[in-house]
Image (cartoon, rainbow, N blue to C red; front, side):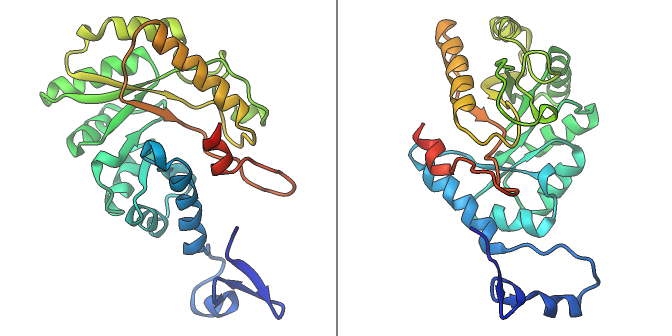
Length: 255
């Protein structure tokens, strides 16, 4: 569903004629439908309501402040990957406890800014990053929440360049390393290992690969008696570019 329609051969966004906007602002411009954004967010929220999810919008996908503010005001959290995105998240008025910091290239100053702001947790991509966050947390004498990104070695049907959960990609940690990290919690006294994270790729149209990856991780957690508060499922829902038939939030939740 979207709110862009033609009426008498005139393009409208919701009830506003696009031509009228073009007369008022410089062209070219980006035009977003508030109703469309919030409708899709609410569909995900309703579909997963039974588990009370924190639904985080990926700022890297669209960092427009108006878009971020609209989603935040309706209850969304934000997924960020840089200091610049943290700055935009703050401008959008998001509660820091609704920010998840992902990404493979976090700088020390960015980590420190996020710790001082009090974000919910970092998604940790490597042992080196784990050490870096520990050093920063110790510097401020704070306990910092983290989630370990697991590479579940799952290959979804999507473009090869946006597969991120295959074993030989640069993203996340293998199960053996994750097991070692959880067994060495005492080496990171300023970190709370509260979650795990997976992200198998983007534009994944079917729920099967997600389900397979989730089950692999759950079996791993059960086998080694690892308790977590958060299971962060990345990747989002595939979209329709032309003839695609992606799963809906409702069908995904039913799996």
